[in-house]
Amino acid sequence: SLPQRVYHGPYDTKEPMSKIADITGYNNYYEFGLDKSDPARNAGKLKTRPWTVQISGLVKKPQTVDIDTLQSWFPLEDRLYRMRCVEGWSLVIPWLGFPLAALLRRIEPTSGAKYIQFTSLADPAQMPGVRDPVLNWPYSEALRLDEAMNPLTLLAVGLDGRILPNQNGAPLRLVVPWKYGFKNIKAITHIKLLAEQPKTTWSIAAPDEYGFYANVNPAVDHPRWSQATERRIGDLGRRPTLPFNGYAAQVAGLYKGMDLRRNF
Amino acid sequence: MGALIPLLVLVSDFYSGQLGANPIQRAEQQTGVLALSLILLSLATTPLRLLAARVNVRLLWPAKVRKTLGLTGAVYAAVHLVIYGLDKGFNPLGLLSDAVKRPYITVGLTALLLLIPLVLTSRKDSVKRLGFERWTRLHRLSYVIAALGVLHFWWSVKKDHTGPLVALVVMLLLFGVRLLLQNRKKARTGTQGGISGD
Image (cartoon, rainbow over all chains, first blue to last red):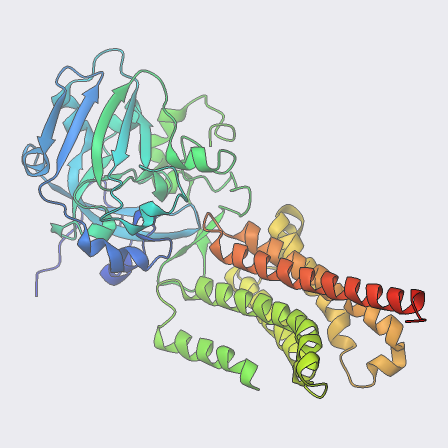
């Protein structure tokens, strides 16, 4: 068997890693079905090579790049992060990827760029869930540029030292550990730099329930359920949810002076 | 007894890990769906009996299972509440604040409370004690309970409304059949009274 990977970088949580079977078997990925077990069952068919990512908008170096080229630009890093779903459960996941900031420095946003928008693949031939108009396809997400530049923000290409399983968002997936899981867009095909804040998939689907920021916040409830606690998958009981999912020291400064109740 | 099999399956699934990564949530959902399904099934028995009687007057089995369906539905609703309590760490204050703050809990809990008088008057002698008219009127609460149950289901899902939609359609069909049967009955008694010299 492979040696256990060691996580003691400055960004790694000290909490025990979740079971890989849970990380790869309990997923919200509506492109492959609405049940948590659907992605593991249906995502195998997705062809993740060849794959290109189109980088456009307010950047000095717009381009369409092959995924293997893209990931060869940066040294890959292991990061053990907490992941808190807006539904009230959480996992501790060993990502492998590179900081989004490294990509941004390479493509050079212009001075007018304030937001970064991501778009997923939406191919009904490979993704049975896309035939169901439960969400506005293709899935899209966005970050403010300073959030995107934070060293915690990762583009993941792997999990536990191996290539990313399809159900976890292969070949390229965003990881923003202080935000609810739905911000972590999967199977990214387009990255665009913008001057204005774009609409995002879940905030279009239910604007009163899912905001643009979606920062993990135990003090601001979902309109239908409490966000004060969460169940770590594998536990029977619940534990308190931490502000910014435990990453307040690194990211709280990004939101200084903002009313987080309004900007949820 | 047969209606308790899902409960046994649930318990055995729980111990064998068949409920997946989030077993409490799965158990909560399964008991909720079971409770609502059984309550809707119990509402289907009367129209079914009336239809069956057209084939053969002695076909009474739908009426005989009505009580069992209703009672088992109530049992699953209670188990559903217990699991919800377990999920919230048996915090009565938290439950109470949930009931006030969260409409889907308010609605679900109301449905559950409304089930209590129906369970209490499900004994054989209850109809006699209350009188047929009053008993029937009381048990019309089951329509309200079904409607609240469907609403609770609808509000409790994140985005996938398939299950709640199926429940809603079934409920509306059952209500429709009842209305139809009632109108026919009225029409029949009306005609009989009007044109007697036929």
